[in-house]
Image (cartoon, rainbow, N blue to C red; front, side, top):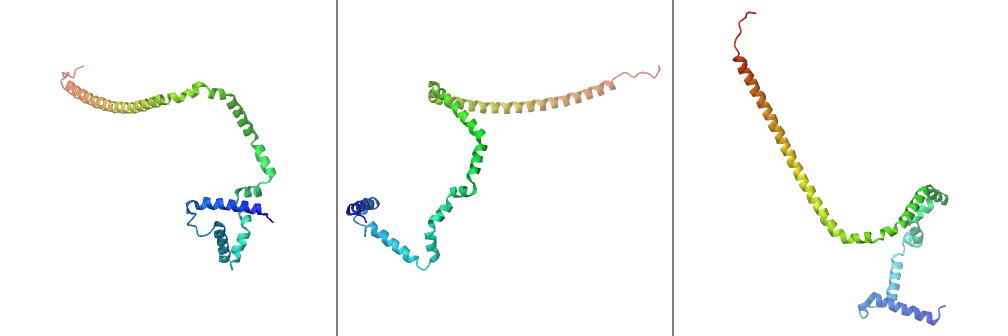
Length: 187
């Protein structure tokens, strides 16, 4: 059995717990927390009377939690040999990753250099340059659209002028052939 000092320690811990839970409501609480919990437990027990299935579920709650654990399925489905084979099949990838990490470790001095640390100072300038670049892209798109429109107009005008010249050529040829001197039929 517990001696008096252990009980005193437990009571002190319970008192601190009640103070933490009830905080400013110390005077307003109707009963100590331990009595409230005991009453609650008895009410739960009374409400479960006659419900054998719920009682069985309470007893099997630990097993249910174990079965709901995602790691439980892995333990059931994959034996240790299969897990070892998975690790061995990924051996090449693991070695590649290890080599890359070693190379990255060697380059740590480069990443910690003054030049890399100074990039924070240039972010505002980089931002303004990026904005200028975006503006220039928009201007280039506008100019491209203008050039396409002008080329389309030029092509339409050249096509119209070509048709007009062909029409004038036909008309001129018709008048020239009409005004040619008539030759006599002697050869």
